[in-house]
Image (tube, rainbow, N blue to C red; front, side, top):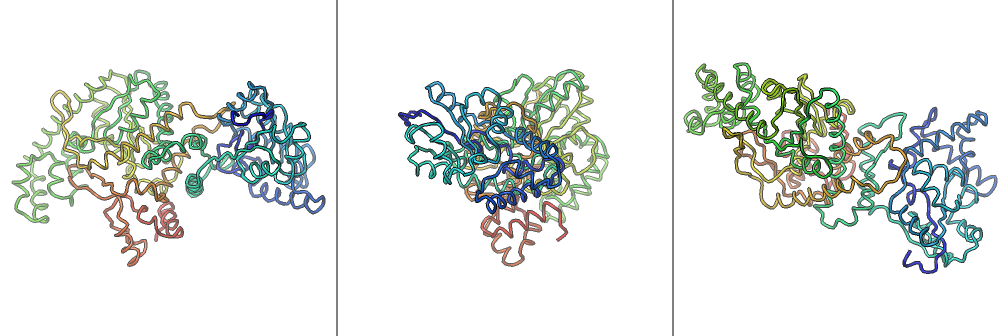
Length: 635
């Protein structure tokens, strides 16, 4: 406005300038139309435009003309009801973009009139009612006049703007026009001498990423009978992403931000539900190391009095669980075949004992010697005694950190994906503190029907098992981006202080990860006050869950080159008593494997983020892998 000296009128496009949709494309709203298949609604709009062009030489149509084609045998009342249903669906999907509304308010304060000029099948009254229903009457009242192509008979690029100038009795230089369509809103206005600005919603890279996320949503499986393609993070990306220059921060802002904002919002709802159901205090126990980023997000906007960072690794949880012969035998049976030294550490052998049993032997001999030792009654007694001591120290760690009272709830917060630590210590924590234990995970795919209180933002309640399995196969990249610079806890002092092994993660990887997390936190902080003005959000929980699932799936299977540039040298520490580090992905190995065996080269691969290795392959190959994993195809 400061640059538009002499302007008397602020002219705005409507859709994607003032009114935005939560969904990816306008046609995603059509799924919510009762009794009408989306394809029917889309096809008959094309037919309505064709009929108008042939019969009257015009291409602009009204919603009434469209429904004349959609419902050819309906009466006027039935068509009116169908139109009302579409307007209601649009209102539930739409919101006003905050920066645009602020511009309108400033314009009004400066004495300018505000008008809407829209290429749309809605008429002026319908547009006004839609804005009021979606964004509130206060926003609608900022607008002095509405102009719609359906009424004018021509679009902006075909001459509607000239008609607008005549109607408002203004010279071109007295109007500032802004819109998202470069051809219609910028070129068309400038051709008439109207000062114009092109609102660029997204960069080309962001457009591609959002298209790929929508593709993943379609493969995941959309809701039926409701608005599809929900992407509630679009406005936040448009407003904030362009200000992020560092590729690592951009990965955190654009990819992890929507995921962890969705996770935190869901955790808030789950904590409130646990409080209503069980009473007492709900203690948020963020399980480090992977709980580091969820905890940082939580601290942005929530009370942290009941939020605690606890260090319970799979290693310490396993060690604390070996208090019975059954638990010992179960672990031996499941883990026999590991490196003997690693299994011995899990079974609470000292390093000196490991050397006595396994030292000087090859792998097969050491494995047999260890198995024989583990079968002895004396060794089992020793393991059980050490496990009881370990569990007492673990309990002291929880007590010194959270100090739960009887009747409270310990809500374990972790990325997932199986809840292995909870499986091992659920009963122990419940009995020791007389509390309820609830695991709340970002991604949950249980390998056994444990019966424990477990839920995931992304779990089998909303997604089928094959989809969950596909995501879990690549979860290591998420773990490495959410963790913190510390070694994994291996034991505790008698006072409950963690004893950690030295971190094997390189300093450079930690520095990159910190920048990624800074970007994620920036998104989540902005999401607390989003650039969105709306009356009511009916799809909030489902929308953010869909956004998290599609964002993760897209990053896992269709990563962009800039994203892979951030994590190209990352390694994953296996943990559980092992010192082994595994590369997340290796394109050079993939190239050789693809040449020799095609996608089957992945079978038996030790790397943790295999789809990233296909980034340079054609889209057919990448989609083949996604489809095979997502649907569990027996190929």
